[in-house]
Image 1 (cartoon, rainbow, N blue to C red):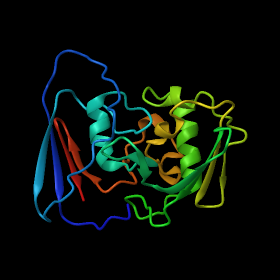
Image 2: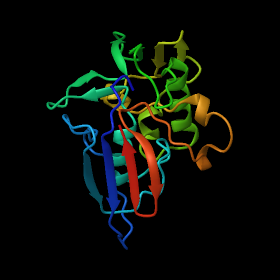
Image 3: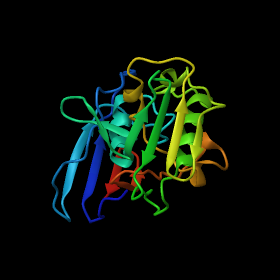
Length: 212
């Protein structure tokens, strides 16, 4: 993430919950606190167990809440639910609303320091479709995967077979690094590397610690 790192730690405590529930995707990402003091901490209590921190494979609202600290979306929304730049610094939409061209923020990086590239965006979307992401796959069913491509390191061209209502809002997805998740068993990968302001510091039963 382009944001400055400090020693702010987010501590997430899980409350055991016997019932199994599938919760809908929140209307907007859950952002980290706007202002924090280095060395401080905040506690978030969740109602269900976080079974995965794989961005593509997560399926509950509580998992989404944790991941919203670790991943910045391509496009965010403001308090009025209007699209605003995030990992994508700007975008263009064709007149027929079938082609979306995203220009990535050149300062965007993953928590391991590697830059966020257009190829990472393509990799993420291909995984969303290939792994039948419970949160996101339906939003990309009309994607023309043959025509969708990375144009250089910082430009992504998404082409859809037909215009989709609200497609821009479907781009509120994090970006997974291909250099981490592109090898080995995608579903079993233990590393958690995102492009947001927080990184995973520690994970054990009932507790997740994120560091900024």
